[in-house]
Image (cartoon, rainbow, N blue to C red; front, side, top):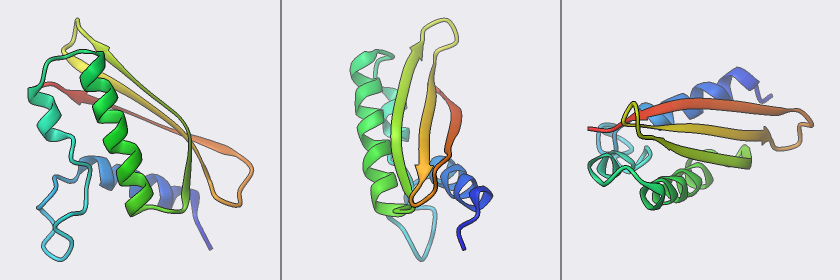
Length: 103
C-alpha cells in the first residue's frame, strides 16, 4: 500500500540529500546544489526545474508531477519551489513546497 506521508517523506529526502552522500546510492538526490552558485534568474530556475523533474522520474516513479513552479525571489536571494503532484492511481493531488537558499 502506498502511503501519502511516505511519498511526502520521499520527496523531502530527495530534496534534502546532497548527491554523493548516500554510500549505497551515490547518484541518489537532486543535483541542484551546483545551481545555487549560478546567477539568480529565470534561466537557472528552469535548469533547476528540469533537474527536479528528471530526478523524480528516476527516483520515485510513484509520483506524477502535475505542475512545477520555481520562482526566483530576488529580495531574499532564494528560489521558491512549488510542486503539485498526484500519486499514481490516486485521485487527489498533493503539494510540496520548499525554498532553496542561494549560496
